[in-house]
Length: 237
Image (tube, rainbow, N blue to C red; front, side, top):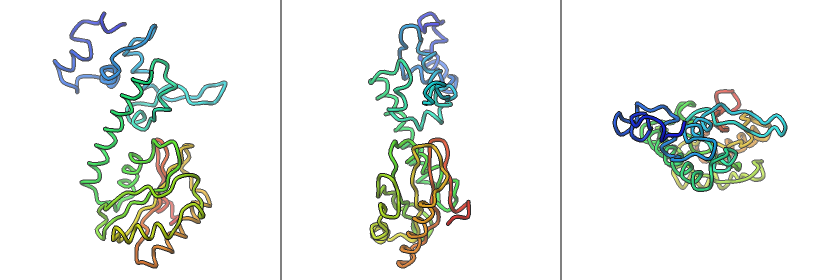
């Protein structure tokens, strides 16, 4: 049903102003942001399609359907949103901007209150920072001696091997921040978080290099949309 045909107090914008945002379903909040649908698809239907469970096209194997709720949508990129019919460049840009603001707000809250000494805290933070990236990056969390975050830096981009990640550069950045410990991290845009032999070898190489300057490697976290793996938890560190 088009929004204009709904009773006034059931239309999302009016409902929000009258009863507050907590009274609205996720699709209704999203519909306010989207504002309009397309021919044959109302804005509430478009919003719900974004939140529907993901699937795969039977013919091509490519992703189809929605993003599995607000949490899944939080990790969607502009390219991911293109598969939803009815999301033109303007709507995609607005959604990406709002989602990025949400990610930054959540990351800031985690950073301000958290001590990064528990794998779950680190995984949550790194998912917000890295999971939505469409290319592979290698990042390092630099921590003080109480495991408070000093800095997060993305140091390398591209397929990660022992030859593409330079231990010397990681050591120099650790010394620059006067870090007592680090957490290594990289993302797998393909969706798998299983560490490869190259990941394990790279971890040991960096652990050895950083030990020479008395910097501990606490973990190496692999991130993908919706999941993350701690190599320390798996006994691979």
